[in-house]
Amino acid sequence: MILKAIDARDIDFTPYGKLFNMRAEGDGLHYTRAADYTDACTAHPVIDTLASLGYTKSSGVPFTAQQMERHFHTQEAQIPESQPIVFLVAPATQAARPQAKDVRAVIIPKGYIAVLERGVWHSASHGLYTETYYYWMANVHKGEPTEWQPIEGGPITVEMPQE
Image (cartoon, rainbow, N blue to C red; front, side):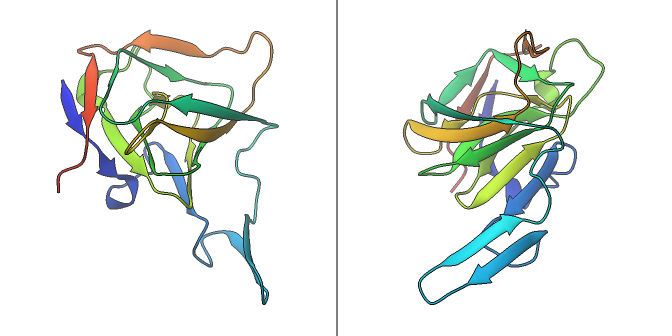
């Protein structure tokens, strides 16, 4: 199956979680302006548990995903570093595996944070243009109950968005 990546701002992201625009005042942010800087921070914790901060390097688009993961014990934030990131998402379900028919490939622009709710299926993130680093935040501990499962009806190849 081939999916074109779509901008997460152009869809209803609520089945997967929430988006924070760190470059816009409001949107649950505290904003500070000074002569030599502008600062934004979330008004509430980014996720609702204690969290570890991760830093991952991955390939760019196109990429092929054979599996997706989900976490029932934590939300997970995905944060672009130097370019937009792209990952697969599918709503939380009781199914033992993500279903290809439910999967979308979403783009998270720089300056945004995507917070995935518990149980939401997702792939690793990838750079929109080239390999990239990105940050993620989740409750990580020894023996954590993360599960990676094959995509039913997959694999899924993600391509650049339509122009």
